[in-house]
Length: 405
Image 1: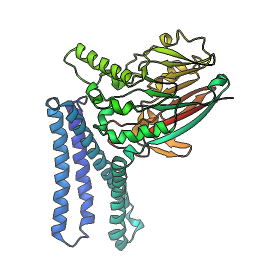
Image 2 (image 1 turned 90 degrees about the horizontal axis):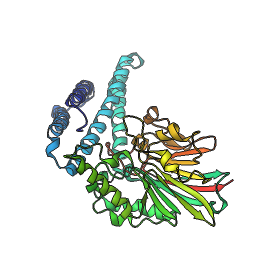
Image 3 (image 1 turned 120 degrees about the vertical axis):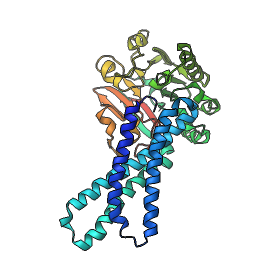
Image 4 (image 1 turned 180 degrees about the vertical axis):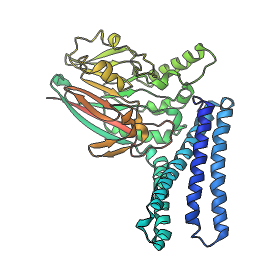
């Protein structure tokens, strides 16, 4: 919230108030069907208590945000974010539906208008509300394994059947020390018996203190041939104000040290070569490289300089924008693994069909893509940021099996 100016916050509050005035107006056409005046008064009072309370909370948090501890600040922002979304969207849909119904009132008789319109209006408001509540309290931590099998002509035969697990965008600060929840993801990962575990960035929201208490959880992750990680845009501390550049660097170093302590080799514009019976593949990792306004710390040229002769390469790069800009049709990298988008934490996944509003910002935003024989897989993220829910976009563990054609 600190990144938003007071003008933006005031505009948001005015939008909430405007929508609630319109909602309240249409609500009267429904509550008038209730005989009890006392019940009507109670509904009206509760309606405005919630509205005024929400707007007040947003303004107070913006004004006092610097005096609140970072850990409590994250919790408050997420809570208010969730309340705002779960209130605004159902009311917006309710207003649109009821306004449309009354505008086309000629479709109904007078008797039908008194019954059908209020019922449809209530349904249009309550249904999205319950869906959003479900996304917050149920699907937020319903981890899902997405299985992918890829065949390559140039994959060395001794790497046929290589089992890869990719996780991304954990955002530990949002878990609020719920170790028991993340333990479920750890068990699911280990059950897949991976040869390699790749983490593609955004371990934290901003701060190294978010990592406290998590080492024993991550120590449980098992991979036969190794664990590798790269950094995401949130791992650099760029979204916080620091008293000095040294403090920011200390925070950054602490995150890198933690990644190494939990058994992951962090790849900072570098590559490693895996050997199996004198056959080789390369694991390449770049620092975060994103389209503006995201910073571009990554240097793919440097990362590739010692593995140009290796025939099969896997690239770990947090932001999928990097694939189109510097990888596909410009290098001989076979498979790129990314995250970053979270699938916007909201969308539709129906077998082979998927959709999310994030597609209008990112061309490659979730799942598998390919151009000729080069592949990109974008993980939907294991954690969450901002809105404390996942609507049709469950947290993902990616399981990839490589085969020789």
